[in-house]
Image (cartoon, rainbow, N blue to C red; front, top):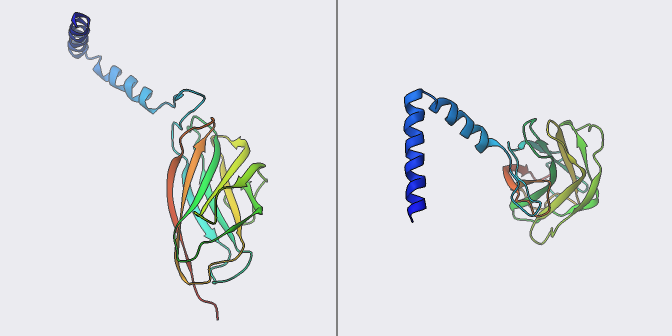
Length: 194
């Protein structure tokens, strides 16, 4: 009990000294720098320093029922991310029909163009879709900070029913069991063909 009181008085005394010398600005800057840094969570788990960004989602076909449509999800990993991006999970969050993807026809590449850039090898594509709409893509090697990657998932077919379909994207840093970071959602509007 006495140790806690002494520690508290010492902290108050140090704060008073910092305020009187004008060193508080330096202290607060140091604390801000520390709070922005990635840190290990234990057991090999990590977090991002700066969040990757979902910058685009698009499809090459908006017509209902079209086979082999490709859905592109482009993610930018900032230079100051602190950790490479190991995987992403793309989840269908809204829509009347469940959209199933052909994992053997899906891929990832560098850049944000529909034409595609250099191929990024994948360790696996899978998940529990179409039952719950999740597809997880694991990069091998992980996408380093400063790179932009596009995940191109080929659908078995577009939904049969027109409407708005919402997909959410979660990014995972390296490390077994590292928590994912939800990057946001994008919507696709499908229209009935002629």
